[in-house]
Length: 204
Length: 95
Image (cartoon, rainbow over all chains, first blue to last red; front, side):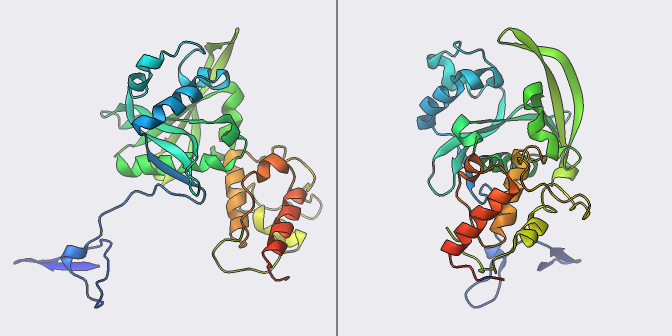
């Protein structure tokens, strides 16, 4: 707790502080807020230009292409680096904390400043997905975007075959709010899409 | 690999289940409906988020399981055996 005294009143700020070597605390030692981008096994870091080929390989996988706003075989390598950032509010690479191995990408996109909403998505390397724990990147990222941006509500879209992925979160920080029947066409058939909503006050 | 935390005593199977289940899939059922130790984790309701919490609950016991654990095991009983094996290798004292 730090107290500042003005001419007319005493102002108390409950800010994080760092103690100096002699145990005293001065205003110049107030600690700037640092986003929590590390979990037990996962670290989120900015996307760098050298990550682009890996991301292109990832998005081009037939099993992931449909989930990532494209039809397999339609990614243009020359335009990919630009396309990767279209409509994006922020995105971070999901990496293995101890080895630095790339596991996937988390992205917040389609932000609405008026409604204070955005969408969130995560794509994981299929090998990482089988491990289970890389989903920690989703949890970290959700907390990060609520803390970094004054968003009220964040949406995630789940295709019917992927809805079970969110089942344990429903009623525990998330709710199912929309259901689009036969909404997307994939490999010869239509699939339902569900919208999962995450409210700031329920998540943080 | 041991977590760089306090080393905790090795739990029995019952104590292990009593520790991890309330932290993941919910309250323990009554004695008439014991947790199905040999049911697959998805059948018990574990999705990716709950698997993450399950690992976190085991981390709390001072044991960090291998990162491919959910590729190799699929039941709570197998998970307990892995926990015992890793804990023994790390010389966690018995309860």
